[in-house]
Image 1 (cartoon, one colour):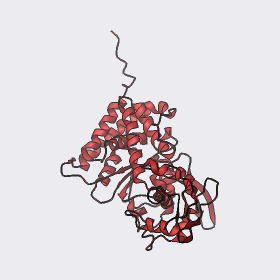
Image 2 (cartoon, one colour):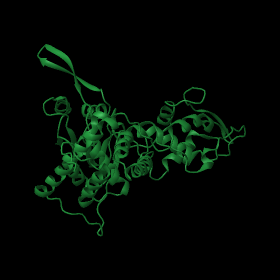
Image 3 (tube, helix red, strand yellow):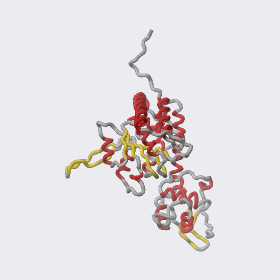
Image 4 (cartoon, one colour):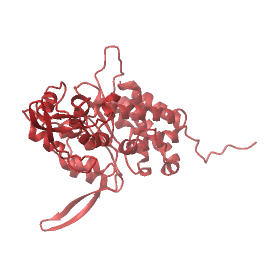
Length: 392
């Protein structure tokens, strides 16, 4: 009779382990989408495999109102990730010195109340924004002068680490585009969650964390060489954000590869529908979808009237005053026509004379490059300039 081999540890079922991690989240968190449970579980696991990836997505729990479960979600994540470092009021210097510390290992930074850092009353905080952005990509460092008095030397501090944040409102665009975004909401009366008891549930989460760490050791080599297939239509920065999570799902196997790709499509689409882009992109999109529909040209005075009358648009109140001719021209001149010339106003003949205005054909190249797909196919149909005067 052959004796069992007790020197080789039993294989860990990655899919079953991720199922347990997901179930742990479901006990305490009510997420708005099923895809969110998949994404957060994969993010927890990816933090144990950070050395396998070229980038690490930020995880952002955001909501318009307090009491939406953001902090609780971050607390649960904290129990599951390696070397969790909870921060509320930490400077960029403190964070990048923590990341560059050798003895303690690279932390997973969990930043609650991020709105106090990037909210409308918080100032710019460019150093912290730079740290979070730089730490998204392997090999990026933060340079600082260290030393006493005039004896200063430039030193590079590593910034690559996993970061999860929670807060009210939104985040700077540069951070949003590097994030898996979970838009939280208050629980409805019929939605129940188990109370999170620190003395009990932290130990339970830490036990799962330790098992995740052991599983990560067994798949590290395979994940390092993996370039997972990204769902069709997910490209550029969203693809970079999701690639580590898809690699974790493929390593786990079971139903996780399918669920991960479905979650990817769902959350990327949700983030794009919530993302109105920069103010310039919003202007281009509103011109295409609400102002120049079926019109090949329009005087500036008419464009401003239509923009400033749009509901749920910022144009009637930009820094306390409505969008005017000068600002409209300046904003559009930052974009180029198909002939690589700045978009500028041109003469338009109307029944009442010649007025300055804009032609749709001059905007078509910028629409194609910067705007999300049009909701209606008619708004995407190229228009030919007309020589007939406008009846205004």
